[in-house]
Length: 301
Ligand code: CP
Ligand code: NVA
Image (cartoon, rainbow, N blue to C red; front, side):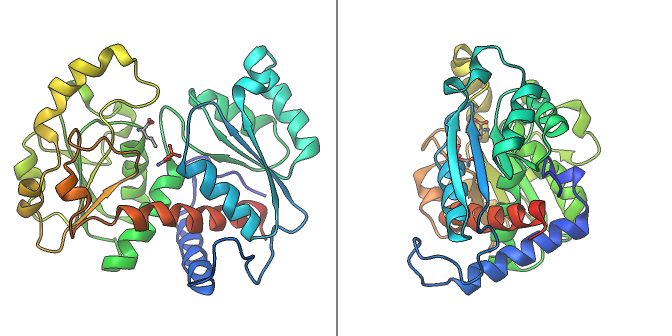
């Protein structure tokens, strides 16, 4: 029984085993209607709590569908509807939930909330995004890259835009999966200092993408960012939009990824999102398969 809190906190061999398991489960149910159960039902009799303190489309639905495909049941809970939103501590909430459910997935603001939940729960806890990281997303991203282009080891990944929570998990993954990561973005939006040494910086996006196997971006204003920062961020980031022209400067077979939701014509043009390099729909689908494997790993089933 192990929590999945972050990519750098998970052993590289375990990360690889999770991706192998995800690929096997995806293959095993290829072509089946989404609602049909998997042949194996490793979560039969298990109850999973999915807690959201922030909005979500992909994380909410992919976890819920994944649990059901594996024979388990879910409760999708919004933080505001729980006593969590009315002063009960995270520790007490974790103790109580552990008496009812077998696994907890939480999307929250402060990383400390996730850590407190994991410390005080008797069941595994999965990080469904915090202000600092988004590890499930990057597991799906690595899976998607490797499906299309083979091993990510030694490849060059370029992140263009805000040095945010999704970038942070890419930085953790660069070390664990041994690929090169380049950040291109404006200095005020640099990644947090704790990530130093995991990536290099090139301020000029055209230079940054030279030789890139994968170009990635994300929203310019994350859910935890103040909306008042929107205009300033747009001004800072305009030069880092992923355009077809920028993609042409990467390798001929470079892929494009975005965790979604995307803001078309802000961080990326529709021409790129809907173009031949884009694997964003596979990336979104692979949230399902990767997280199923994460849940099995957490529960040891
Ligand atoms: N990429 C991602 O986590 O999407 P949601 O916010 O819709 O869950
Ligand atoms: N960086 C974004 C990712 C959304 C999936 C956010 O935190 O809002």
